[in-house]
Length: 396
Image (tube, rainbow, N blue to C red; front, side):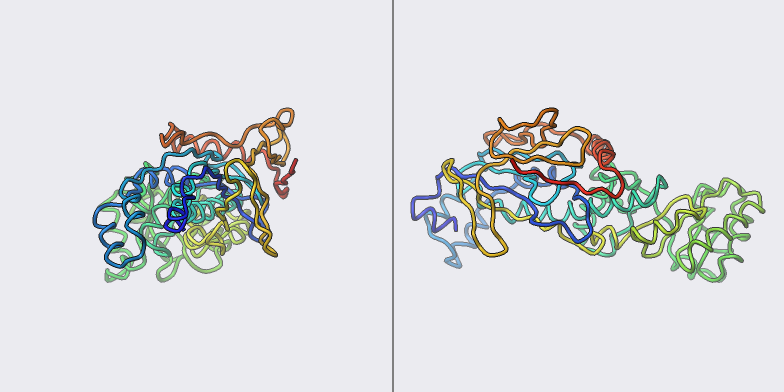
């Protein structure tokens, strides 16, 4: 597209692209916008180095004129976006790119690949956090996705309220609290369960979490307390009827004097299964696949569409894929689960909170919130939508 537009003299026309979701996954009441800081990092680093240009030249993919253009490429336009952690719904203009056609069209795959993944994970994590009802949830999805996607998933999950991650690279890169336990392989390495517990406690002391369901959970719990003492930090149960196992484990721990020892439940938990455990004496959960795979919807469904050329609205008329032309502005109505979208900034409703902010101006990235600030912000906006209520969109 860039090559043909440049040769046609259209590359430099001023345009507006918007990112939005045509529809939320079935049953979802809102989406959670995440990945913006990763997008901005990627744009900062987006360059066509000599080796890339040589590769393109060697395969005659584009013209020499376009190759020379790519060598000079630096994004110089403006980007406006929702804050990370903000809620959105069908049609919300979560990100707007304004610049020349050439520089803006190049960003499509970069922008969508990050926002679709991170926003999917964040929405799933937010629902899981809600289901957990205040009990902490560890993100444990690294084994269920690509290794770099796992780091991004840990960030998006933490932004949306998960307490920690088992991914150490995410802890190193983003400062996310890390947590984890031994796996069954560690227990199976030893001649018996007691020896495995002794080795773990020798390394970490009683401030550790012992996995007690490798053989027989109810035989393992007394061994765990015998080895670590009543100050054992936690036990983890990964199988069986988790609600029943948690109740029996709590009773056993209390009878052994380990009244402060926590019970952590794991095992392919998702929003529904965690919600079903609300009445059992669990102290926390671990969630993996359901987070990394977006609770069955591993993409947020975002698209990147051209909505204006030289200030004039343009729109698709394709059946089932029509778009609304023109640059959009959006506001959240105070105290309501509603979003107002208009084609003019002058249509701001009384008491409306502006949802878009400028994050890149003339190619220069502007300072933005930290991950901790985005996490706190999500909790604030999440509280604006009552349980069971969907976020509605009003077009003016």
